Length: 188
Image (cartoon, rainbow, N blue to C red; front, side):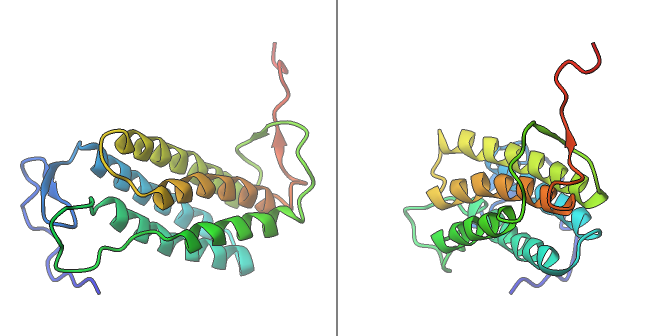
């Protein structure tokens, strides 16, 4: 368990931060950007949860916890040297659970006939925000994977997460009835 007695340490005053394995990296490092953007997506989900209840809220709560697992995964690069602890990694079961949740939410929602604009209810709007932030996190993780090892499950989780957040936004919009649809060329 994490225990923080002091919030500030001054160790980052020169623009570096420690990864989970102790190595120092620039705060602008791609790995730091990736897990920082996962944290940002988590915060946006927290905003959405101010407007959700029941099964959807519980689902989003599980995802928020998963996002801390994902952040820990991304903050711990694989190493040839054994670590003094077992690194926390996203596992295939977490990806599978997202797929089941997507299918369960989507079963009650009619197919879309146009692209959906971010909006509708406050919950849906925040879920769209979280979706776009999770897509950015995915792009950063994919870019990171081009030069460093990132687990396949971490990348899969990010890809499914944005799908789930899209479907969840439609669920929050009365199962699509309150979706705001794009009308191509409407304002020409």
